[in-house]
Image 1 (cartoon, rainbow, N blue to C red):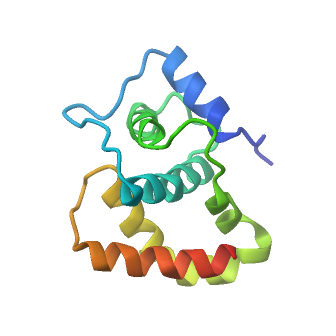
Image 2 (cartoon, rainbow, N blue to C red):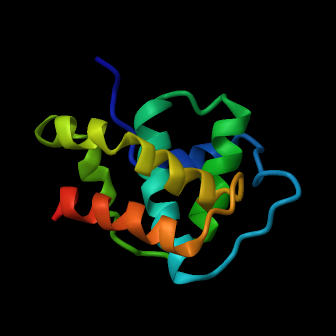
Length: 125
């Protein structure tokens, strides 16, 4: 079993390894980017656990981390626990939509992003 590394430890390790944010992307400070970044941070850290050598992973993590105020609790880490596995898998498209929006890979209508977040909030509530 892989050793769990917290999001904060991952971000520090990525920065110490010389990584920077996604090239050409600047952090955006908004409530929607903050919340989708929390989803994305939990998602990527779960998927790429212990893979801090992956440049693209680190770039995305650093960008999303810059969009979240320091000290913000991340309730979305709970999406990737055994207790929430079934509902989280059913909402994987919503997780992916939030992540893609957080790193500016896509720009869906705000209402679509809000609907995805509403689904995810219900799972972690």
